[in-house]
Length: 362
Image (cartoon, rainbow, N blue to C red):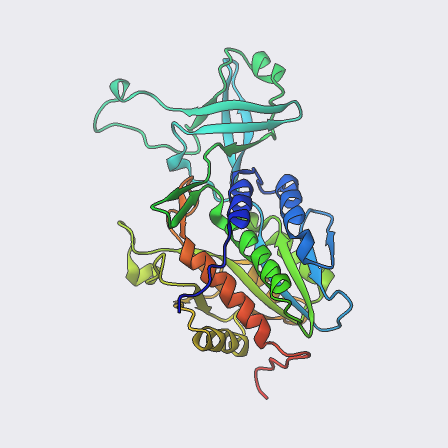
């Protein structure tokens, strides 16, 4: 018998709206409002911390606390300098890729509203073959149609305004979700769907579940660092994206072998608590959920590290969603993987007992 689909039309409509909404690092509030509005029917309580991390809670009075977590912020740019003739130079806000910038349409976020602009680039006819300069942080620039600095500033643009790409959510070949900021609003979407699944299946959890959508991951796991101290969890299951290495120009010997459509990726590494990892793998095997494996040298580079090494040590694990073209405007994930990450988190939660002892040596 085929597995029942996890996603429905309402959830995919939310996913599209959530991806299309801008949520740059440090300015995540609009995306967090969307997310909280969606999960509200599936939780008992919620709170938002000082910097904007949103937390939905199921069983808020329980002493034993389990977190499922993703991060809400997307890479972006800041206005850094406006020239006398009206061109705008930028700096990164997170790991924005300068090589993809030329010819991209962007939104500059100002107090007056959105100002449209483009990353300009000299036409091929004007460049000398063999001597062409590649895009760098020093030469990429924005053009918002103004001829003077005063005209730019009159629009409301100033140093410090944040800039996001315009690209929208699309579906390729009925199975591949494409858009900017799949890293990691796909994660926020998946943990919201876990909360929905718990509610709709009337699953009773023997612990408090904290559904956490953290801010500021793209600049160093900052939101997770703050919220873990506030919650004080016993267990954390983090979800983020990882590279699909089955596309051209990627070396599997260096980056590992993971592919979109082949299932969630579980990570081995020092920050991953082995007993919790075993529980997740057993949940996958028991429920016939396909999964892949990856190894992390030193750190995972995700919020898993922030949870694992805080408050005396939190039993933490990472379940990743394979993704193509990370930190571009055409990030791509497979529908089957999205559904299977949701299933795997849900089944893993069902395997955790009240006051579960994840002690490394029992």
